Each structure stands twice: as structure tokens, then as C-alpha cells.
Amino acid sequence: MSGEYLPYGGGGSLMSPCYIDMDLWYEYTSNNDQRGLGFTFMDGYEAWGSTTKYSNTMLNYTNSEGKSVDAYELSIVTKFCPYEEKRVALGVSYDDQTSTSWPLNYPLIRLEDMQLYYAELLVEDGNIASAMGYVNNIRKRAGVPEVSTSCSSSDALSYIKRERRLELFQEGIRWFDQVRYGEWDTTTKAKFDRHKIDGAYQSGVSADNIVAGKYLCPIPLDEINAVPGLYTQNEGWN
Image 1 (tube, rainbow, N blue to C red):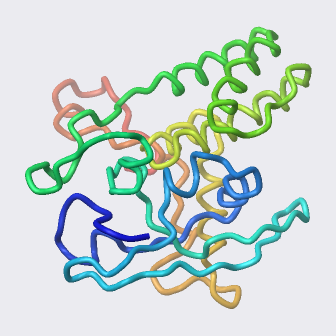
Image 2 (cartoon, one colour):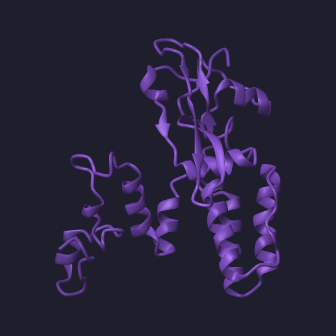
Image 3 (tube, one colour):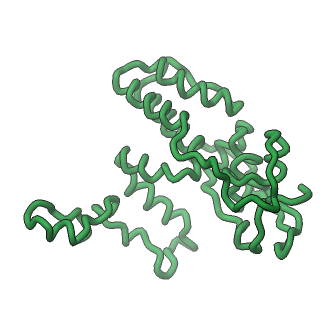
């Protein structure tokens, strides 16, 4: 990579590498998913301003199904960041000197999000073929193999869940999906467990702190006091 990568300055903290769930990397990497490297992630950058050069490192990962893939250990998330190589690839112009840090047309609700919601409803109605049609429209655009349109309802829902994770990564949606599916507690605990060192949680970081009702925000005390007895505080916030 060469040239200017991000349209704003401020030092290395703006481009700090982060750990990515290896299962997610496997999905992006094994199928050469166009939503992965070069769209959602960067694999490194040259020295720029006060930021020193960074090169990602690779490791071999084997998932729970025994499938292996070389994946990046750390990465730079740039999904909605109009860095130079992405702008060139998309044919989009951008004035690095006068533009602000964030693009003006930042997506809040995307068509793909609505299509996958609708696909869930179709599965509930037993219309598997139509549901998978929406999933495959998104997968075709991403350049990855389509899924079967004649599968069980449980497999269809699994395909939809996976596609929401791949398509909507870093868009502030996954937590609400996990709550809707009733999986927030098990997936949160699994995330903590993945970051154990020598089988132990680190100081101040423990899945033991997960409280059953705290996937909901607390009801504000002013609202509870306004009409006594009308509200019952959400579990875990008493």
C-alpha cells in the first residue's frame, strides 16, 4: 500500500489494530468474500504523518469444524472510512484537505438489513426458498457461493444469522440481533472465554459479571417515581 490512507490526521490512535473473531475471519477469508479485506479491513499501511508503518501478521486458524485458514491476527477496521485505495477502487473522489473525519452519507438503515429481517419472517412462515433468495442476492453481490434454497427452517435461520454477521459487521446491529435471538448471554460469555490467558480470566474481566437482566437498559428513576407502581425496574438493576 502507498500514499495517504485515511482522510484525517491525529496520530496512530485512529488506526489502532484490533483482534477479530477468527470465525469471522474464516468466513471472509475462505471464500474471498469481497466484504472482507479491502472493504471492511486493511492489512497494513505505510508511515503517514506521526503514524509509523504497520504490517499485519498471519496465523493459521482451525475452526470448530476442523477447517483451517490463514487469517490476520490483528486488523484495522475501515468499513466506512474512505481511505485512498478504497476511493480509487470505487471511483469516488474525496478532498482530504477540506473534508471532515466522517462521511456525510453514513448509512443508518441499509436495504440489506431490511432484506435479512424480511427473510427471517419468511422462514417463520415456512417460505424457505424466498427467504434464501434474499440471502443469496446479498451473497452474489459479495462474490461468495450461494446457499441452498431447499433446506430446513433451522438451517435457513442459521444462514440468515451468519449473513447478518458478515454483512452488517461494525454497524452497531449485532448486539440487538443477539438479544432478539435469545443468545446474548451465551455469546457474551464465549467472547470472554476466548480472551482467557492460560485458562484464566484477567483482572477485572470475567464472564461471572454477566447479569441476567442487563441486556435491557434500566428504567430511569424519574420515570419510576413519576407514577409509583406503574413500572417495575428491569431485572439486574434493582
